[in-house]
Length: 367
Ligand SMILES: Nc1nc2c(ncn2[C@@H]2O[C@H](COP(=O)(O)OP(=O)(O)O)[C@@H](O)[C@H]2O)c(=O)[nH]1
Ligand SMILES: [Mg+2]
Image (cartoon, rainbow, N blue to C red; front, side):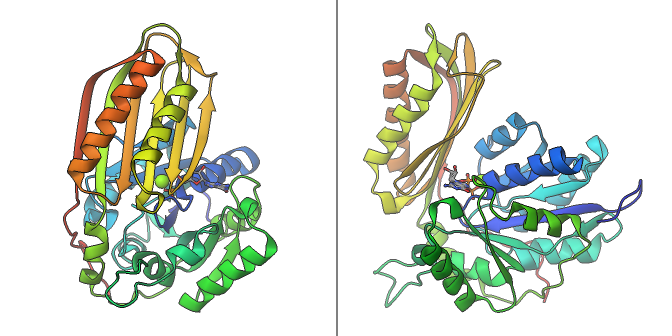
């Protein structure tokens, strides 16, 4: 990594499937770069929707954040570069970490490769990292069989094949055997990538990843042309529900009780295998809480400033679930209303959207 006024900004892209641990790892790496290495870090997040939990979470962690909304980086390359430039002019960060949507399938060819070839004076692009959830490696890397009726996915294994480094996440929940199985499964998919088993929670091997980020190693892998239509069915099977609202506490609102009770309702409304990733975050001037649900695993990811607030807060919800947009709308509206009633909160000025994203056309494709 070069230093100096006009040196290019180090650029790190962290890809990987829904719920793999991209945001958590980006925050952990960012904090460590800041506290141990004195480097400033800015973040670019990306998703369908107008208000993103990932963006709120990163802002709450004290990073400069810009988001690309309404579609993948790969289909909004111009806006992606504009955001990166804005971050540079805002705070001259040493490192920018970008997290694409969990279902994106054209990141090496449509983001990493064009960024490194078109803007070498502005950005020095590190090798492309793809995160695989170590606790779900066998399941997410399982391919559809027959007519796809037995489950299985194409997107996660394709993402892994694009990687220059595969990061097997959540090692704190893996024993040695699980970890080596996950490594084997990843190696079956990709032979020209390094594999690192890591954990944002236990900090296992974060130093190795930081070493790569702080080095001068650059992305060189050539993208392979893939017919993006092969992912269309998988992408279309998932519905998106996003909401954001003002949350008014009737007395003292227990935000931990709010997010937990809300997630329990969601978890009982949908079968675990249909839950791609549901994220909910409450922020207020005094306290914040974020909670995630991936399949049947529920986790409070951040509780800051205590668990209560009075007055007004902000509620943000992003959900990706295999169900029709209308089913999502009915279930989520009811879960929000019931939770508010139970915990003594009023939900006002709610903006919401539910949809199945249209197939995306990458802005550019480099052979
Ligand atoms: N046990 C464990 N859980 C993790 C770790 N990193 C992330 N998670 C959890 O995995 C879920 C999804 O994480 P997130 O970073 O939002 O995933 P993303 O969708 O890839 O950005 C959250 O509940 C996180 O708390 C880790 O290192 N260990
Ligand atoms: Mg994320």
